[in-house]
Image 1 (spheres, one colour):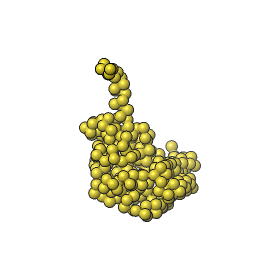
Image 2 (spheres, one colour):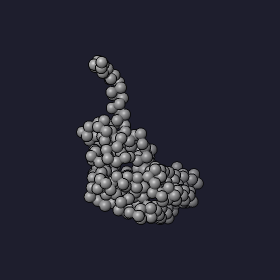
Image 3 (cartoon, rainbow, N blue to C red):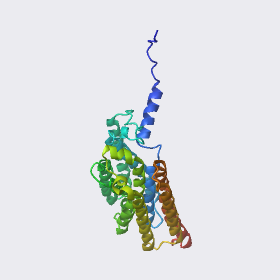
Image 4 (cartoon, helix red, strand yellow):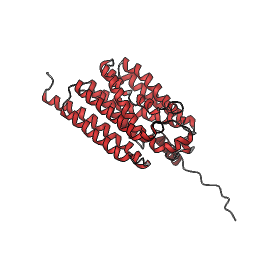
Length: 309
């Protein structure tokens, strides 16, 4: 005889906790790697623009804005990919893919987070920064759709993930120096490098779904292309060091970053999915090495030649 008693209703606190957990996973607060990959080049630009003396208000503004915009980007990305993610091994467990939350909820979360980020920029930075925030939001919001039509969506992502650089310069100077656009271009190659490693994880699934990625476009030259992008990025940053007359600590940071890139080559050369993902995750150390070199170089210089009272 079967038990026909109705199921015990779940406590309200448990329903709310599960919903908040789903939102947390939607915006990847449990996976901060994307935030770090956005943050290090933005802070590097802020330090370069201010010659090592950024306002701590601006540091807080750009750190908070980075977290908010990366979270908004994850929500809109999952909304755009909601019909693909259930068929990809790595993304099948995401909240939209498992129907834990509805598509409209993802859109609402993205809109609220982007609005909060814009308000922080509007209330705390310059007119030039505010104007730059508009194309930044447009590029970030449209990136998820680029893999349907653009053969190298990783380059599109490179623009989205590098827009904090000119915005940092604009916040300091109320204008964007030519160096900022060079930094954006160099950083774009770094983004292509690490996001190609990421795409190598999903290559088989993406081919079946008819999506476009750099891992597919580069084909058997994928590893060589990744290393070439690392080389362009690091070479470009060495040129920045010459332009800004940076010292040994900066170049030590670049050497450490180059060591990270070589380590990634060891991981991806066999094209094993797990190792490619491991290389992708390790990239935040590469970005941190570059930022640390900039920050330490300016800090030592400030101690050696303190500002006049």
